[in-house]
Image 1 (cartoon, one colour):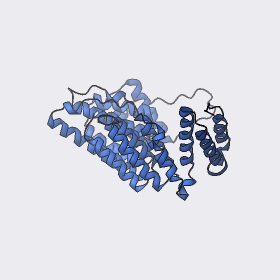
Image 2 (tube, helix red, strand yellow):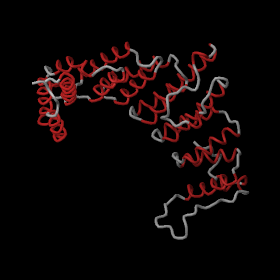
Image 3 (cartoon, one colour):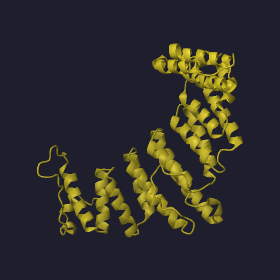
Image 4 (tube, helix red, strand yellow):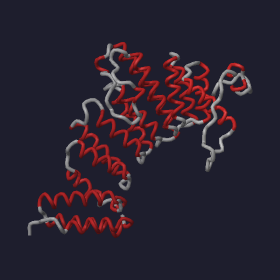
Length: 357
C-alpha cells in the first residue's frame, strides 16, 4: 500500500539524491549473512541514514511505510514512525485506515497492534486533554487495566465521543477476530481499549459479546478468558450477584460439554476470585457422574478430588479421604491415565491427612 507513482524505486528519484545510504555492518567476516533481497537491503540503507540524521520529514515518513510493508515486525521503524507522526502533526485518523489495511495483511504482527494502541491513545489525549493522565505511547498492549481517565466525570458531549471511539475500535477488533478467534494480540488490544477509556457502558456490551462467541463455540478459550477479564475488571468489580450469575453460566456450559476444560477453569476461577470455596459445587459435580459422557471427563473427577481432599482436611473425615482416593484411582487408571503418575502421587498424599478414627 506504500504510495508509488511509478515503478521507479524511491532511491532512484531526484529528491533522494542528497541522502548517502549507510550499508549494514556485519563485520569483516560474517559467519551466516542474511540473504536480504536487494530491495529490502537498499531500503534499509536509506533508513539507517534517516535515523542517523534524525530527519523529521515527509520523505522520512514515507520511507517508514515502505520499510514496514517490507518487514511489518520491524519495531525500530514503527517507533521512528510514531515520532514522525507526532513531529509532523499528521492526521491520526488516516493512520488508523492504513493500520487497518496492515492488520488485514498481517494479523499476527504484535508491532501493528501496538502501533494502533499508540495512535488511539494519542487520539484520546487530543479529545480529552484535561482528563487523560496516562501516555499511551509508553503502554504495552497487555499492561495494567488502569483507566486513563474517569468516564463518569466527562461532560455528556465527551461521553458520547468516547463511546463512539470505543465502539469503532471494538467493532474493528471483532472483524479481525472473525478470521482468527484465538488472535492473542487482538484480544490484548481489546482489553486495553476496554480499560483505557474507563468504566463506561461498553463493559456490559462486552459481556454480551463473549456470550455470543461462546454460543457459537463453547470451546473458545479466548472468549472464556475475555469474559473473566470483563467480570473481574468491569465497573464495581466482581460482586456477589456477578459470582452467582457466572457460576450458573459456567455450569450450563459444562452440562453441554463436560470434557471441555475452559468452563471448568472459569468456574473455579470465579469462585476463588469471589472468595467462595470450591466445595460449593460439590453437589453439581456429583450430579454429573450420573451422565455417561460426564463420567469420563477428567475435569469432573479432578474437581471432586479437590473437593473431597479439602473436606478431609477441614473435617478430618476418613470418609472424604476414601472418596478422594476413589477419584484419584479413577483418574489414574481410566479417565486420565496419561497423568497416572501425578494422580497416584496425589493419592499418596491423602495418606498424610490426619483424620478422626
